[in-house]
Length: 463
Ligand code: LLP
Image 1: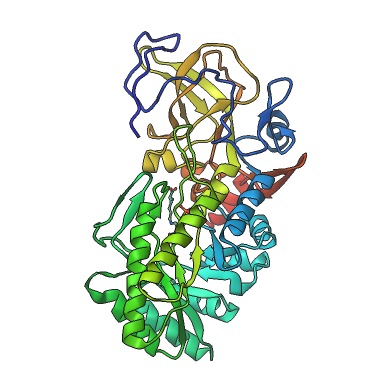
Image 2 (image 1 turned 180 degrees about the horizontal axis):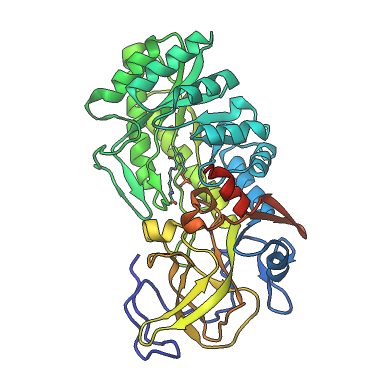
């Protein structure tokens, strides 16, 4: 996203440096509903509240840093996806975005299915009571042990990712006296990220079986011959943080083309098509995500149209949103430890977490917003960089954002839209302890993933 330096500056610089920022917001105390979870607001004293609890109480009771997850918002978003796609389609929440047993139970209650991509995610799903037939098992290198566990449990589908896996899953299913429902993940030559997609991207990546060169058709040929497999459909996932639906349009066109080839060659019309996840959310006020009902309408229309022109029955559609459900529902609450103005540059605001609780800024150059949440302030905007406590200069949480220039140690600040790919990608770098996930709902806060302790760290270190 192109951003330009803004002429109006912080107290310590006449000219602002180049950076990833636009103008400071007119009111630093305002909270853009696009990037904050739905029950967030400020109380009469100016303290931010979520789910009916203020952040000072949350910090006192649970410490900082902490991921604060708005349960009502999570349930609303899950339900909105479910309702938008209706009874003729399936929504599989992508557990890689964030998974815990409480989340599994919410998903189950809201009628969603679950996509898991490792034995650990599968174990979490099963232990929280997600019916196995509502689970899809993904991954480009599932172990024999993982496949066995999934087949024994009776997962609804295994998404096959390679020629070896077609044989492996068939063999395991057969040896267990089962016929496993499977989809084949193909790469359609479409790569989409944020606002752009490339329709001619070559399949130079580890996932799926390329459509190009007839490889996907050959995979289907082999899968159809194996007694241990029931091939129910084709799977395609084109990328992450996508706003532009045209990538899905090209992908659907190509997947339906393969379904037609399969019908012509084998006389079989596969009943399902999975278009993956990847739908974008607002990390900053500049992002404009689409609502689930618009996405459902667009995807359904695309698939229906393509099938009509190929004279195929429209297959059952499934989608796998992760970020679009959980991403906007949480923020990370930090306490400010130090404030270091660098003349002519920006102010470094150090918090008590960092790259171990949010690696996305360092890894993807991701953009985030930030706000002072323990009070309001009328002070002038100060160009700030929110950094962590790790021994690494790339330990940046928010690259460039405006905070009030009276910010001081002890203030609480929060980074919104950290529900997806933050706790799930957290690490123990520098032996920093991973923060808890605190779910808030109607005035109650409940720890759904507890804070790691030094005992947890030392338990793994067996000397
Ligand atoms: N389905 C499949 C097959 C996927 O590979 C993914 C994500 C999803 C669904 C869910 O995508 P979502 O709707 O959450 O965008 N760590 C990166 C994102 C990696 C996504 C991997 N696959 C990040 O932090 O942006």
